[in-house]
Amino acid sequence: MNNKKIIFCTIFLCICIISFIYLFLLLSENTKKHDTNKTVNIVFTTDVNYKNYLKTTLRSAVASKSKDSIYNINIICVDLSKKDCNEYNKFETENVNVNLVPVSLDNIKNIGNYEIEHRVTRADLFKFFMPDLFPDLDKILYIDVDTAIVKDLTDLYNTNLKDKFIAVVNKPIKDYDTILIRGRFYPKKVRKYNCGVILYNLNLWRKYDISEKLVHEKNIDEDRELMTQNIFNNVLSQNKIVKLAPIYNVMVQWNDTMYKRYFFVFAYFPYCALHSCRFEKLLDNAVIIHYLDREKAWERRNDLSNYWLKYVKDEDYK
Image (cartoon, rainbow, N blue to C red; front, side, top):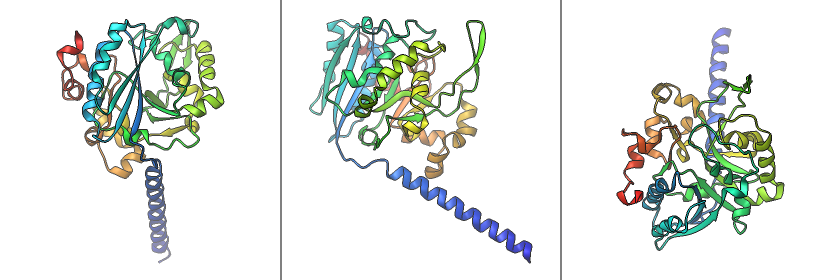
């Protein structure tokens, strides 16, 4: 009898704990947003390597927005000709404004003065300077060029940042590998979140000189694998960020079949606990799909790349 009571009490306690966790997650999810602002300030950075691909990404954003939302799209044109920059003006509509911000790599020549092996160029360093580039804004949404924007961005933009510096999506798999630097092995610092989609709290950045801290970290960084993502993770740790639902930065990798089918629910436990989703359902609910592999969507032809390819037009490459 006593054993039955113990078993019953244990089961009841477990149910109570699980219910509490579920309610906590549900409340956390539902209290992140409180604004109803329909104006979305967006920023992309591009250079000669990505100038044409950005046109496809812009087309996806314009095609997927709600009729009543207003997009102010800012494009940081890194060492692009005036003619190339002006190509983006064609995406203006009644509720889409385009603001061109010409900059030069000469302005950041003393910051982490090296290239990295794969496709992230030094133009990525302008992520550090959003408060200076947009002094009149309190908040801005940065999105990488290698993305397909498949739903309206208003809910994402209206995320309550509270006292946090940025809102980002955590990576599905944490990286605990080692890296060879100058003949020695170092443990990689865990890069817990991805920087392909970043919602900035610009006022808080200005208050705490975050740009300066990022530049300092970059200049002493020995990890040459990434341009900015490791720097962000080093300076702005988990307690300084808002964790976004994975629908806002669905990270597509070509060789992740096992992960998608078996480990997804564990990688994104809070979201999956609330929405009972698999990777395929996540794609259906996605707002931004991010092709973060070295091979991009314009180089692959399969069901995953179709989210990006559907917005391609021949004129994008003229």
